[in-house]
Image (cartoon, rainbow, N blue to C red; front, side, top):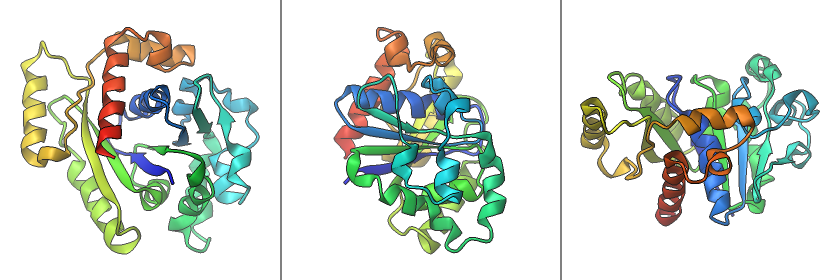
Length: 253
């Protein structure tokens, strides 16, 4: 039975989709069978893995609203052991359409329940919001990874996300856990990066991953080639960071 992990932070630009793509690829490189679910209407996780969005007839939108068999929406990627359920801009309107549906917070949980046995890990790339799609993702998940950018406003908005997680635990998903806080865009030349890491560590202790994702130009370049950084430049610092993160996650589980 696979573990379902959401990557969530309503603050944009923190490296959430970059982490979703590269952690999924790193877990696959470690021999795990992985499904990445793109739950963001921008569909950056889909295009970042080289999937042509315009050519996909079945996406996460059809799974949620059309009630299709989710197996029909799963596509292979260029990474061995890594599959994807792509997103589409239509997902923008899904939250309105979901309002009149029964158990609207549980739709994604039902979808992934039909796929869970096929994978070791299912990662969900959430949109930078705390809307109904993100609530669905957290309700469907066993745990959540929270990427935190190494900048002055790093903790801004985390309290709101933690409150949302608390509400979901109490109302919808009592077993939901915080897998960890992941520091991203770290630059060891800057004292600020070290200060932010120490501040997050002081607040959240062992919930902070030991692995830190360094600022690395290869991480920015890889999506434009439709690749994870592990396939674009496996010797880069970014690739090494995500392999280390995948290994740490596997050890934790």
